[in-house]
View 1 (cartoon, rainbow, N blue to C red):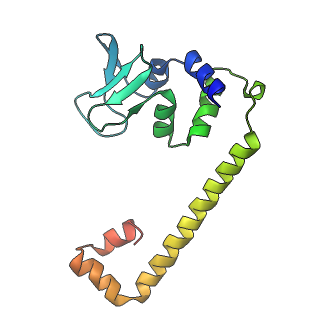
View 2 (tube, rainbow, N blue to C red):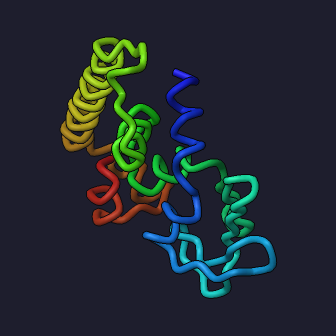
View 3 (cartoon, one colour):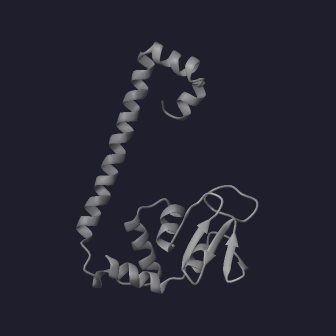
Length: 153
């Protein structure tokens, strides 16, 4: 996998990728802007074209172009690789990548999401059957009915 990631890193510019989503201004040898990962008025998000990395000094997020795409698009590493390879017009078929293994990983991740959703629904139903538990959440934990519903407790 490292050959394709190296080729992508040498083909895409982190400033170009990030500037499609964040308004950046030159700040010395770097670029700065407001962080896309948290609300702020004073820019604390820095991008280094020389190092090809980003760092937010407000929330602490940082990394390379893969990390940015993962965080911003809310996708996993493999999907970020595919997206950036497509953007860089890199033919992934010329690399020795076990795509079946990667697709299997993605399928497993989807299964896990469905399992978590089923478990959450089960516990919501069980809470409705247990008035003592609901009283505990309201009186001891100071949660409102709206909080309980919003967070799926």
